Length: 185
Image (cartoon, rainbow, N blue to C red):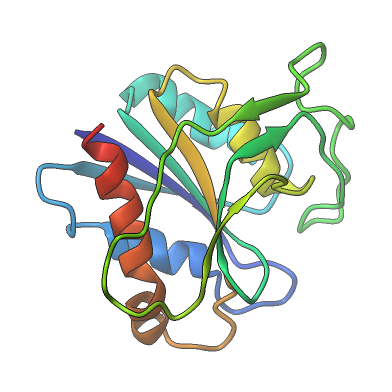
């Protein structure tokens, strides 16, 4: 099993990006899985310039994008829309309002998930129907257009100033379970 996990660098003056901490938390915790992590800047074009060549070169069986979202839940995004808005970390707007000219209006995640652990959750888990219009949505839309059989994206609560270890202890089990469930399909 080959799994590729993408995450983003800190942005908007933050010292940490929880997606990085959680992506690296997954390393060496999944037996029988060759897992690679790719970190990307919060810049338009990063997904296409950094993640896509790695996907094409390595041909993973599972592709998980992780990004920071709202503070109250882990959101497993189910739909990526062919839209992008907002200035990136450098203040640069997207090159166009659509991700793919003449592309489908939306693309569906190829992940399934059911929380079946008896462990109490630090935050609720939701399925999302709208990944926004920023770089996370861009990643989901692009990933779901690849040949990777199981591709999806998860928004996690911002890490803030929390140290990596307690942050990952709270949210890491959810991501581990998500990867395990989609590795066995």
